[in-house]
Image: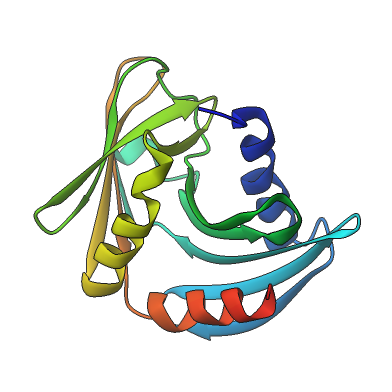
Length: 167
């Protein structure tokens, strides 16, 4: 969990940029995905973004789940996978990302999730490129089981565009 505080700011910055609270440039749209680049001070941030297509339980549908794949060259970060759930998550428990038969352990801090083992990011991104859907299984701070489902259509094209923008 090295650099968790630093990592925690990227989804928030990207979310602000995606909602117009910072200068963000839409680079490309493909399927359910969009690529953006944004200047954060002197550092460039590039990211692919998708919104959850479905969310359970139903009472959480008024807030959107977001999936980011971010690169911050000035920090040596490339294709960091993170989730912004927009509700408080239970910490110190394992959450899961499921792509086909592949499962990945996630950790939570506040309303955000990351891979428990950041070294698995290339393997997860590869599974995402090959898959058609991703499910995030989590537990809210209140103890409720949650599920967000994302389409992976368009991911490969948009991630490449974000990567190219941050070279």
